Amino acid sequence: MTNKEEVFGLIQGHPEGLDDDDISELTGIKPRQQVQQLCNQLATSKRIRRESVEKTGKRRKIHNFPTDENDRPSSPSRKEFETEKWRRRLSALVAATGQNEGDLLDEALHLLALKVLKNAPETK
Image (cartoon, rainbow, N blue to C red):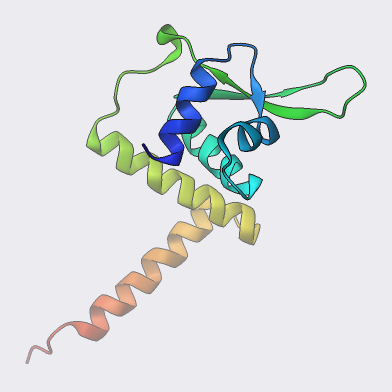
């Protein structure tokens, strides 16, 4: 069983929700940041839900909850999966550079065109 499947199974058994520290302690997965990455991946694929929760006497933490069967979308098609992957990459670039999507796409197309033209065979 992979760490991701172990984390998913643990969360399914805890409808009250578990934070990343709890999951790390219960599974032995170290460092805790690995648990965070696994939970983010599970949440992105809609297998779990991550929510900020405030508990009395404790600081606010992100908790991981099982999703209801009704909350889960049907399996995305290959095309939808690829589109979502590119959307996430573009969003990350927007966040990292502060440029808008249109400018980033224009620049990417320009660089691709230059590369294609540079590698194109010369015609006479």
